[in-house]
Figure (cartoon, rainbow, N blue to C red):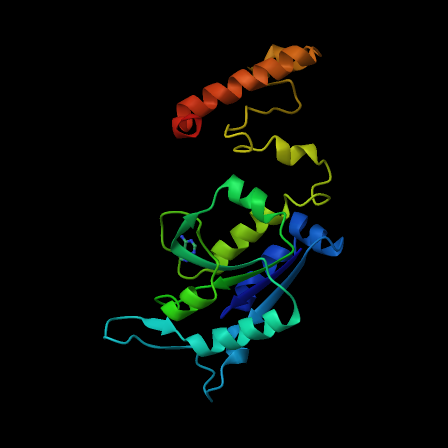
Length: 224
Ligand code: ADE
């Protein structure tokens, strides 16, 4: 998979891809992440990428020209499955969306800033608008990193133990059951006996029951 991220703050987006699982996925050649500084596509002498709103009102708007130039260049080089815009009024990210996007070849992610982008970018280029939740960030960069992380870890070969993504919270619309590691007892706090029993049928049953109970208590909406 190839992910092209268009941003006015490429520096903010470097470190998430330089550590841990995402770095390993890149090093293994499973995913390529390319950051594009939108200012490089500005033709005005101050390298501006935003302007005042027509009709008046506070806040700047990201201009259509540099975004058009950047997306047009990328699209001339390869076909893209989706051109995604990060925005709080997009569809809220969930595990199902991450699963589907992990199967794509090439995607562009445009990070919004200021008041957002000129509507014509959304009308003519954007194929999917994603929010990471009902709150407003100061820009789309951190949200883009969240989306990229959620997608990349699901690509086969990225997680060393491939089953581990399958037992994540949300994978079957259930939250994960409690997990424990050694020591089996600490300060009198004990690990549930069933997990030490070696009876894997009982362990599976216990985990399923716990996952269901946990989901009923915390996220009953997932069971509807
Ligand atoms: N940009 C600003 N806030 C955002 C959010 N919640 N999700 C995606 N992009 C955003």
